[in-house]
Image: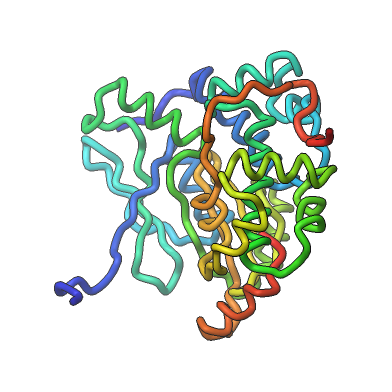
Length: 153
Length: 151
C-alpha cells in the first residue's frame, strides 16, 4: 500500500557551514543550487541532481530545535562520521572519481567492482559519507548470483 | 541566520580521527602502524591510541580487527575460497590468529559462520556498516602496532 505518497521530496543533510556545503555539492558533485532563502530564523538552502526532483536540504546544525548541548553532540557525530550518508549514481564512475580525486576531495575508497556495478566512497567537508556508484545492467537475481564470486568491498 | 563558528577543537579532532579511521577501512589488509595513522590525524604516536579510543570507544587495533573480520565474513558468505586464503587477504599473518580473533568477535568459527550464512545483495557500504561485528567484551590490546595481527 503506497498510502498516497508519491515521491521522496527533500532529504536533510547536516552541515556545519552552509557556504562550504553549497560549494562542495555544486562545484564538486555537480548538484544544482535550488532554493537559497533567508527565512530570518534559518537559511533554507537546497540543492539537487539536475533533472531529478529530490532535493537535499543543506541544514545547518544548531537551530533552536536543539539545545546547545544537543547541537554540540550532533556536530561531534557529524565530524566523527557517525551520521547517515548519500548513495548516488554516476553515468561514468571512473570519470567522476578522477575529477573528485584531482580536485582534492577526501576519497575514502577507490572504485571497486561490485556485483551490482562499480562504486567508490568519499566524505563531504564535514564528515558525511557519500558513495557514488555506476550500476550495471544486471537484474537483481543475476546480481545475487554474482555475489558468489565477489571479492571486493 | 549567520554562519557557524570554526570547528571546535573537539570537532576538529573528530574530523582528523575520522580520516585515520577511513584509512584503516581502506587499507585494512596492509600492516598499518601507529605512526602512519597518527600522522594522518596530526597527532603524536603516543597520543593517537588514547584519542582514538576517546572518540570511537575502542582501540585502533580492535577497530582494525573488526574491519578485517567484517571483510572476512563477507568473503566467507559470498565466495567458496579457502579460509586460509581469506585470512591472508584481509590482513592476518597467521591462520591461528585469524581463527581466534574471528571466533572471539563473531562467536562462531569461520567454518561455522560460512555454513550458516548466505550471500547478501545490497550495496557494499551498507553491508560493511551493518555486518561489522560488535565488540563482545572489553579487550585490552597492544597499541604498539596497529595492524600486524601476527603471533
